[in-house]
Image 1 (tube, one colour):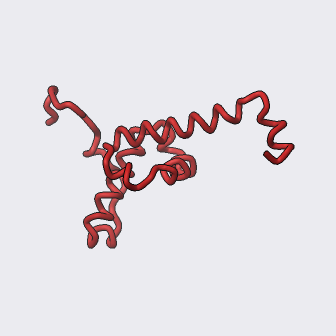
Image 2 (image 1 turned 30 degrees about the vertical axis):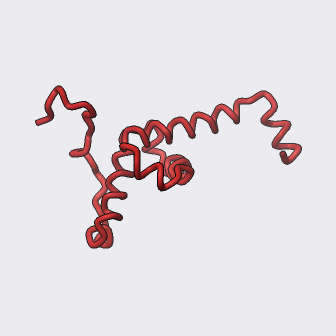
Length: 100
């Protein structure tokens, strides 16, 4: 049961990705896998594995260690939005043709 006054209600109980055997032997790797799975649940692009992974890789590890999964999901979405906005820029096709 989740207390209604809990400051950051989340869906940790819904983590669908099981840890690997190696992750169970290494507690830091296991925590990291859980954090990534939780961030995927908070992210709009979490179901799109390639998009999520590409944007997750842009987050520095030191920053990822300090933030909550919810915050990390937001950052991944912001990075994906910035990429999409760049593709919608009026000069995008010209820049691609010029090789810039």
